[in-house]
Length: 341
Image (cartoon, rainbow, N blue to C red):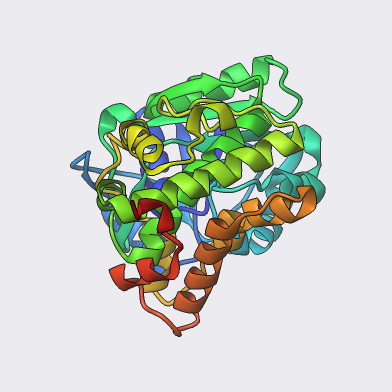
């Protein structure tokens, strides 16, 4: 089977490296020439949870030839269209594209290449791009997991085959409720990634501070209410189930009682910083509209107030536009009155 990792940033590089290490025929595709050159010359250097340099094959899209049987799609949302355009000539009727981005990219990808080619997925581990050829695994190795599924929830031979390949890089779960899985991951990202970007800090530091935890809890509850209104059933990720019944609170004491439940969900990912924060440090735009902004979008659609998610979108937009900096002082923009006795 000929495999491509399309968009070989931090997660794509590590995934491609681990598959290559396990004798898969993989090419890592990226638009960053210096990164591609470094990967080919020196291999993929993975640090952090794994410390190893693994030989890989990497390529710019313009230098590819032939078709791929399987493509793991790991680009940022803002680059999806250009990335898919660059490999359309290498996609056949039988090619399977697995969407491993944050957010809900499946609608766009289905429209672009046809739903029959698409399997959805959600990555349950984090990584940071350090420099060309070098990526850091910022999650514990034991927490490396992926959830995949057919868009219609069926358990097919091809999704089982994709799972068997991904298992070379960690634990894999096949879901019969992909949309619930994707939305649950959106809520997870909206809490930890959203606040990590706002405050310029790690997931663990966000979870440990009562003020930022209060923001996380409200962000998650707004997302749970939106899911309920849309008729989407949540899926537990790392033991965290974002449904209204489980994570509702109305008083400070109820909020405090939920703190361990929220904290446990990032036990293996405390050192992570949001990929959006990494983007900002490199002068790039973020995926904020596909994460917290998606909750806001659906809140408007279903008449659910989402003030905490709206505030995260507002702050992150100002940060990426240079009007604010990622800093703990941004906590003062949120309504934390529930913490007042």
